[in-house]
Image (cartoon, rainbow, N blue to C red; front, side, top):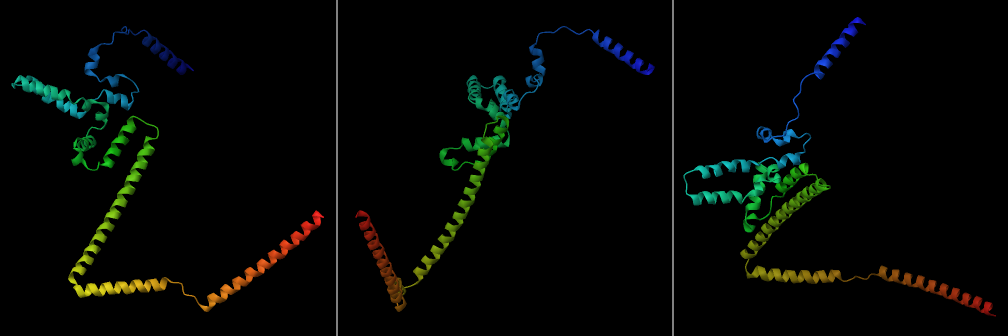
Amino acid sequence: MPLLENHLEQIQSSSTAIAELPFPAPRRFTNALLRSHDITTLIRDTESHERALFDLSPLVSDGLAPRRRTIYSSRSPNERLFNGIDQHRQPRYGSAVATLLAGELGDQIRKEGGKGARERGEPDVEVLLQGAEKLCGVYPIPGASEKITSLRTRHDQLTSSVARFEARVSKQTGQLAQINKGKDTHGDYDDDEHSDGSDDHARLRSTLEQPQITAEDFLREEEEIRELEKKKRALESRVSEMERDLGGLLR
């Protein structure tokens, strides 16, 4: 117990000393603090999309240096003005989306979008899907991940189908070229013989397509006719019996 009392006394004295410490009064929030620290470090629990709003893309940070050089260089005023206007014409590079897509992915997307309609051809779907995934990781959209997955699967299926059909077309093109080459090497006699052979083949095919009637077919038809006549007589007898019954009821 004496040992515990000593610890309690030390805790009490430490608490009293901490409570009596002089703290400065609350001061006004000044811009001097912002100049040395990022604003996102002063706010707790910031989201990634919030931090992106206060970050500059590498393109803007790299573009500031040439602009400053033109302001303080010895070039003509017209050239400085032109460079300054040129810098103001590209505000989209400083957006949050440009910050998130900065780097190699952003360069690929800008290269695809900067080409003309004739030079562009087919867009790089995989690059666009990667950019969409990166944006959805920061700005979540309900159902966007599933949609991106389905689009990637569909693109893979179409790519494989296109490759398969292209291989088939190339194969058939080669076969057609061989056939045409064989036709060119033959003379008129071979052409006449080929035409006669095709005519004979057509006549033979028409002959084979005609139905061939045998004795078994006749016997089978006669048997079916006899069965139908038997069913007809049975139905006629039932109808006559029903007529007799109806006549008795009417009486």
